[in-house]
Length: 78
Image (cartoon, rainbow, N blue to C red; front, side, top):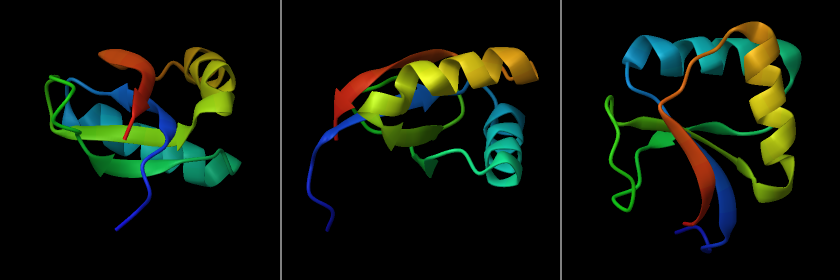
């Protein structure tokens, strides 16, 4: 089991959005990975992107530049 820590969590309203994020981030070597949506967050599709908390602003800017959509984002202790 992973140790809990503050993470940037980006939740998606559709599975296609989560898949697009995964594909883009792998291609461009961005930090993070897809995870099941933590129970402390309610959002559409059940998947979220988890990355180090200190890379959150960078990821949101990256998503804007790439035209990637998300439902909500924030720092969570997961």
